[in-house]
Image (cartoon, rainbow, N blue to C red; front, side, top):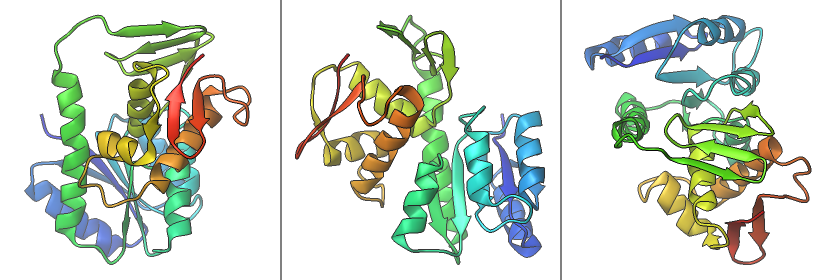
Length: 229
């Protein structure tokens, strides 16, 4: 089945170019040209990937990404003309899975997309088995990739879930930031260890009652992170 992609950018030439190129690879592509239109599209459709520009009318890409993360874990790649580290960190904090700076090479965009889609396919193709972890008031279903705390579903990005899954299934094992980066993101990921810090902070904001005094994901100062209740 063809992957369904939403391309969001107010520059119609960029949208047209991305749409044409992705369709050449057999993908089904829909388009949106402002933040409100993008948000409605994700609410009303199932996508395998969203390419989301930051500088958008009505709602900017950061706002859209944050609002999508309240109800969906669809992979999001941010597209932006801003290239400094702070913008990259902010994009990841709002729940983006990856980040590409304009002007970009369409081959790089497709390579990043395919890497994320490939990881998702591998997870879906895994043998069907009961893979539910219940710890204290947390229930983690790794087959459906769902997380519940006190019976309430918590929406995580793909990377947030991967990170929590690794830590939770290996309680009290301390992982360095570099080990987490290589294990969860892969050795070919162009980011650095700060990516891990951003995702841990974002994860704590979602699962901890008091992120500054975490119950689940703890810091071993000078070493890395570990899971314990």
